Amino acid sequence: MIAKLNLQLTDLGYSQMVEHLAKIHYFVEPFCVCLKRTLPRLHPLHQILKYHCREVIVPNTFGTPALTHQLGFMSKLFGYGEAGAKRLIRAARPLSTWQVTDFRGNIKKRGVDDKDLLPYFPYRDDGEKLLDVIESMVKDYVDLYYKFDAQVKSDYELQAYIKEVSIQGTGKNGGIGRIEGLPPKLNSKRELCEFVSRLICHVTIQHTALNYELADYGSYVPDTPTKLYNDTRVKEGKFSAYRLPNRETAALQGAFVNALASFRYDTLFDYHDKLDDEEAKKIVRKYYNRLRETVQPDLEREDNKRLANGDLTYPYYLPSWMPNGIQT
Image (tube, rainbow, N blue to C red; front, side, top):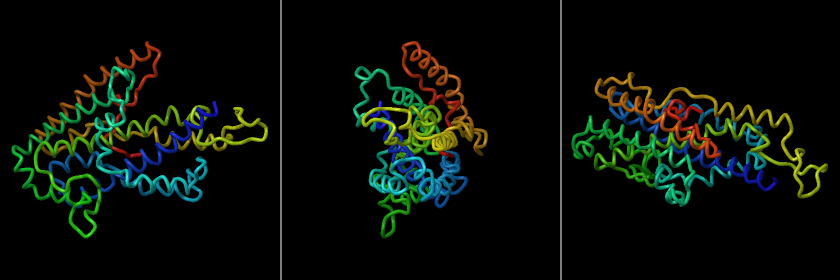
C-alpha cells in the first residue's frame, strides 16, 4: 500500500507540474499571445482559434503565483514544495517542443498503440475518435478559405504568425514564442490543417485528460495523497492512515483539485453561431452536431461496455463535457 500510494503521489505531482502546467498551459501561451499580435480579427484562423485560446493568459498569470509562491499550494500540499515545483517546470522546458502536440505519434512512441496487446486504453481510443472529428472540421474549414497551396504560402499574415511562434523565426533569438520543432513557414494546405488540428487537440483532448480527472482521483486523498508522512505511531514499512495528510491538508487538497477540475466555460465547437461567415458557421455547426449526435452516444456505449466488463469508465471525453480550451 505504501508503494502504491508513493506511485500515485509521484504521478500526480509530475503530471500536474510537467504534463499539465509546463507542456500545456505554458506551452500554449505563445500561440495565443502571438495570435493577437499577428492575425487580424477577421482572419479566418483568428475567428476560430480565439475561442480555443480564450482565457489562457488568466490561469497562467494568476495561477502560477498561487502554485509556486513560497506559501502556495505546492508548498502546502506536495512533499517537493515550492522549490521542487519550480525545478520540475525548468526541467520540462526542453521537453516542451511541438512534438508534444502529436497525439497519435506520442501514443505510438510510448508503445501503447497496439490494440491487441492493450485492448483497454480509453485515453487512446476515445481520443482518436475526437481527433478524427477535429481533423475533419479543420480540413473543411481550411478548404473554405484556401483553394490552393499557393494561397497558404502567400498569406503573409498567417506566415507572420507561424514565424513569430517558431524558434526559427525572425529575430536574434528566433520568434517570440520560441517553440522548438515548429516550422517557421507553412507551405501547403496539408501543413496548415495539421498545425491547426494539433493545436486544437492539445488544448481540448490533451488538457481534458490531465485536468478533469482530478475531480475523481485527486480529490479523494486516500487514493491519491499529495504526500505521505513518517509518523512515530506507525512501525517502519507499515501502512496506516496516520501516514496520510491531516484533515486540514486533505481539505485544502480537495478544494484545490475541485477548483481546477469542476469548471467548464463552454463546450467544443459551440462557437459556430458566433462566426461572421455563414459558410463557416455551417461547417463548425456540422461538426458540433456530429460530436453531440454521433460521437457522444458512441462513447457512452463504449463506457457501458467497459462497466459491464468490470473496467473503469472514462467519461472525460464526452463532447458535452469537453471545453474549447484551458480556462482552468
